[in-house]
Length: 325
Image (cartoon, rainbow, N blue to C red; front, side, top):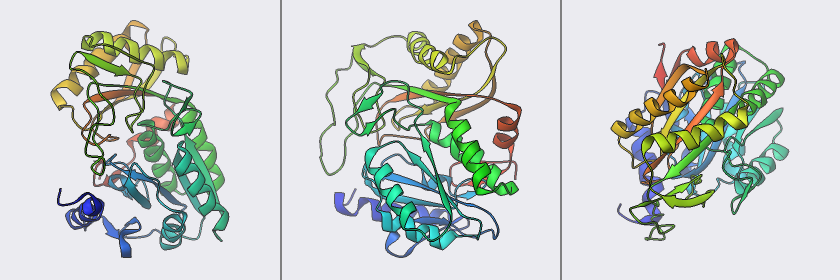
């Protein structure tokens, strides 16, 4: 970096330049928006602290978000950012906010929703099964399952669903989604200049949050198969997965994990699910909801109804997710 204070601004400038065919960066870098609005469509807006890239700006574009509001690293964006983003991408059919369940995000998005003139609704994502309460939130945290909610809702908005239909669908997708992660290293917030937590090379944090929050427990480093067994079992239990059900499986890296290891975890997780008679209908693998340079991964499963699969397969064209176009 050049300086901790300018890191986000310089990164946003680079992102907007690299993806100028898809997005526009607002004045004062308040939000990233879709380059071409679609009149008559419900506008989908999300956001949160930086440090989780490509979430959320990387998912702005056809078939996903209309705008994303970036806060400083691990810090919520402001209500003004959200209001200005909503006004910029308003297509005349209302605004749907997709919000991860963290105290700052919840408070600021709620304030923005209350101040908006446009009709609006909020979908809250709380897919993390690891802990019910943490320093950052009351109740379950919103983590990698946010991507699945944004993709499915983005496709539904693109086909013309109205605001009420999208709210109902978003809540249903969130209810059908569960995640759990493990960290092998900490992350380092640039302004702090030191790791968020200390962990030895032969330990892992099971159930870690995407801001480096503690998980369920600190244990000795285990094999990939044992990690997959624990994470997947927690997700299966939460969703009540039964034989003959299908899922969308996201194996997500936290920023410092090579694809070699992530695909190994895909294989390990697939085997755990198969033992229970659960079939993976769709796969997505990569670092999509990160925690700066943290090494580790999370397992996310969404119970896959025919409608969810159809919307998942629908065309998408964003900086970080592209298919079917």
